[in-house]
Length: 464
Image (cartoon, rainbow, N blue to C red):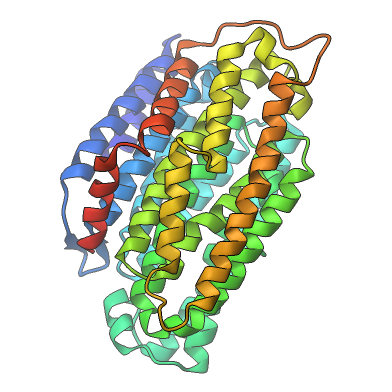
């Protein structure tokens, strides 16, 4: 909140400064870095009569999302230089969505959760429509906000069912008194449907491809990782904590949704030639892998989910950083053909793109392989009495991992093998893009092999 207020007043104070976008970017980045410190140090606490609750694992996820937001701010510097008049609005909207996600993850009451969700969703729609004079950007924002409004209505309807069945909206009180009744089942289904939109789970994913394609590339990256990370952890905590007594009913639903999400996301990704739509369906598939951890219904599940989001932030933001810089230097093209022969003219950029894609595909020794391994292990743990279905879901996920490797290699093939008479000429990246690529590449290479990172997350999950 303090960061948002400071950026708001700085926007007015620097109104006549020609370096306003750069100064605001530095201020926002510094404030985000300052926010990392309390996220590491804070423990469990409550406020507002138990409506706001923090825990170590929530603080860890806040740290990860702050890290992802910082990369977005760094990556967007070149793009914001072309939108200097709106730089203040951009940074305030980014911080507003982050504040909403913080509130959503720390909610101990369904109304505060809903307020946080809306606080994150409405500024996000404004960011999607940020390219005011591009038809696709306005179309993407319209589809996003209309679907978000409908899903919020469905979710609120489900929350009203839960209140009617239990008589409270506090998570702890509901977890202690909830029983299997038609009202609670309907409330659970509607709640899951509403939050499934935010995560892009099948069949709530239809907005994703058009929104990703139309939004400015830095915003697409922000939407794909930061928003998804907050929603997945929130859904996991609510399912495991609030609806823990109904696990035998929501777990089969989750199995079906996960298998559909991973499979449909992969199959549709193969058909794409526009890279941002390609990454949209990749993001849908990755959402299925993230939610696969929840099947385990244990502290290990939260550890695997959080670690997966951390690795996903590094790999996906590296991909979108490359997409952004190629788009800027190639007349706004984001189709896959624009990458033909990229290795011959920009070998370093092609190499970093390859590392990021390999991590997303789960190829060793990159961090993506470790994150998928931990998710698979979490999914099959704790199901000794009914081992078939969890193992079957993991088997489907393993098959889809091979499928995902195929379509990620299509981009690698375009960069290294496909011949192009007029490939993208050699160019120099801006310093901001170089920093974002460097940070993401370090994460791709080190997050998997530095065991202290996983142990830090696991310690926080065990304290929940």
